Length: 464
Image 1 (cartoon, one colour):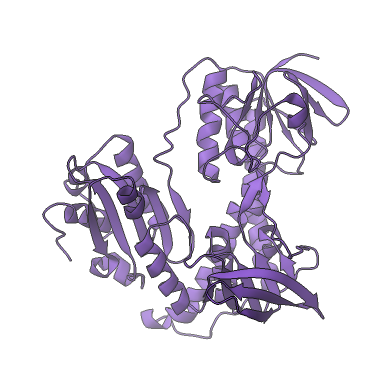
Image 2: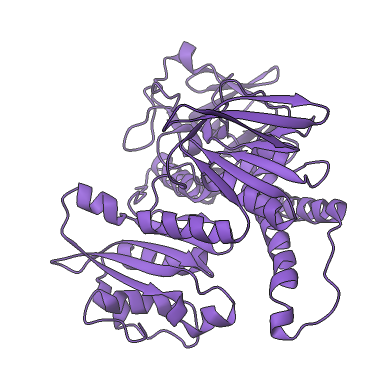
């Protein structure tokens, strides 16, 4: 059996991108994946299917809430849940088959099965041991568990993010445990579909790590859309009986105990690295106390020739972060220079409105002792946003007070996930707020709000 230059373990966004880039650089590559389809969690049971449901449920919301305002009259649209799930599955299938095509195009061998690393340079899949010069661990992550809560996706009552994408029916009521990205996105889906959704969060605010003003405005908008929030609450258990669930929690402020009844419970308390079965402890590959694989500045583990990327290593658990690392480590293995700018990795919540951010928050900048100036512009002053019935949010730009260099941006509003990349490019090239302010933006677009926020860092916004 011929030796590979590289075997990638895992065909998620980090793994498949790494494999393709390495093949483009002339390496002989194989990728190990035990799922029946390529694409990992993101394409199969994460990013892509959840965005399909978010889009479908947003269309439903528009028909019920805004069509008549625009003169589009007629009976309200009803939901065929089976067809909606079918649309979601078709979306997933089209994307996963696309990755399979790219593997064939780039002559990448798909080693079907689950991998273990026998030694540096040896990967076992099934009963076969393959030899390789380099190994990249791109095994991804899995939903975190919560003490006192047993998840059973097949039963469809207490589920994690995977089970929430395949509920047998739209529940009349749902409790979401955790007010992070996953919980709010999927909670938003079911709220639009008619469920009475209550979000229970341990902290006293939603979306931990985000800009404080964004957190408050986001919660206000979601509350207006029908979601209920119980903050500062520690869930102690979930029981099920007669096809329903009872969630028990204690409020941290007074230690009082409360319960909520619901037809479905979504446990969305984050994710953890998935490295089980790889044999890393036997190999001597070092991991952190939180289960992440330790790596150096070139993504190499403590064992020479074994690298790791994506959700398996420290950093934000984002598909695009994994993709960047996948390309970078492929470059390194091919003898080139791989680079990831970790200070310019955007994050997006795909609710309506969308929430997007990159770089420093105002709080983080002040905590670091940075002297900053803040430019803020409300979408209420943006003509396009008002036409879309999405004028409740704002753009907030953080710039260095002395150099005017852009340090971060936070957007809550229409198309935020697309608009944030203008600022990402600006930050990548060390641009100032004035550079953005002096750049002509097409009218009418939502992106004009970014320019206005940049203007607000200087002489002042025009339309505020």
